[in-house]
Length: 94
Length: 130
Image (cartoon, rainbow over all chains, first blue to last red; front, top):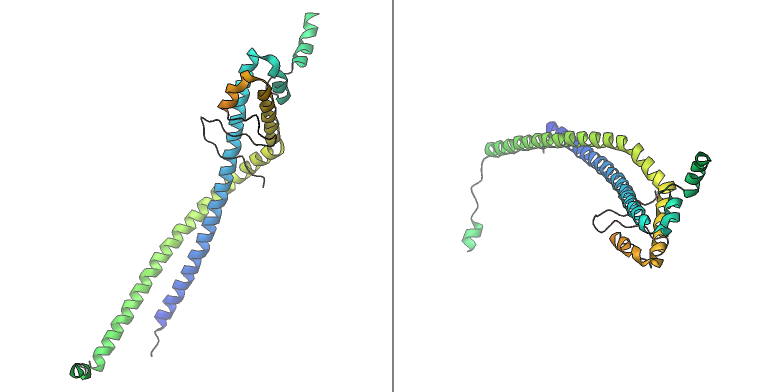
């Protein structure tokens, strides 16, 4: 059977193109996956920060009615330390 | 029945076969060219997508890594400790129960439990350490 060189060349080009498609697909999927992972992690961190921030806000509001929670808020830095504010205000009173 | 099977079909002459073969050959070449063009277009599209995602990744990765590392090193433990203390406080103070309920904090939960989002908002789980 007579072989057509053009057909062989076209098939070779097609094979190369298919391989390139596979490589590019892999690169795209890999990049997208990394991007999604990073975005998910950052979103989770930000959600946690929002959660704790809202909790701290409510706890701060609650501390106006019940000061027993103040040490926890002071330790977390949500509320300024009483001793620091007292020592800062003392020289002014003298 | 035997007559039908033994009946030989009319043999096309050689030139007609050659013409059909040439026609098939040209059809094959045309289809190959078409598939190569489609494949090349798809490759171009993929190439652009890879380029865009790589650019996005390069832009996001440093900031995201910094945010995640900061959270894992300092922010996360501090927040977990704060939530733990708040939870312990809520265990002994009944008037703090509404806030506990709002944030879905359970007094019986272990100290290492990570905080969950308030019931009003949906948030994914905290980031896993890399």
